[in-house]
Length: 151
Image (cartoon, rainbow, N blue to C red; front, side, top):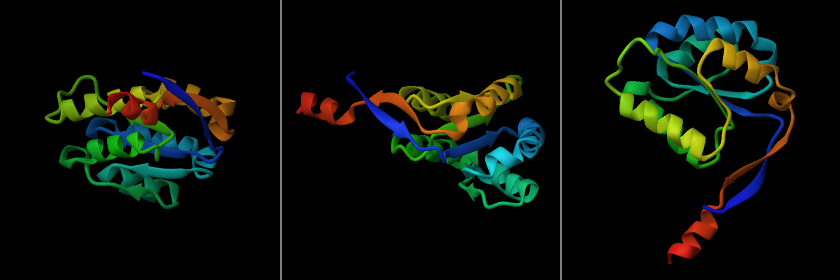
């Protein structure tokens, strides 16, 4: 597929997601990095959004719960170019009934070339990057040329 360059703005749209066993880890991580996170637009799935809003004391756009379609909701927002970064603390030891949704979310994030962190270590690397607070260029699928080639 052809690619095109786009500029991701300095103020990012950051999605924060955590499985039940990982919510305390994500809220602790977010609290530690509060000063950086609150400069950006934050969104999260269901309960995680409520917990983060309470912990950080700033608005967090809470979508629906992951098992009820929140992971798919996030995937749609990524495909629409409305999410710039995904922080997703998933539990590798707990099988989830919505595992196909999780795989689809991670796949669409990779397709649209957005940075993904799935652990505290990777989230620390991501948030400490100078690109977290700066505009940067990235390559994404050129959907318009893809459509032209198919019609």
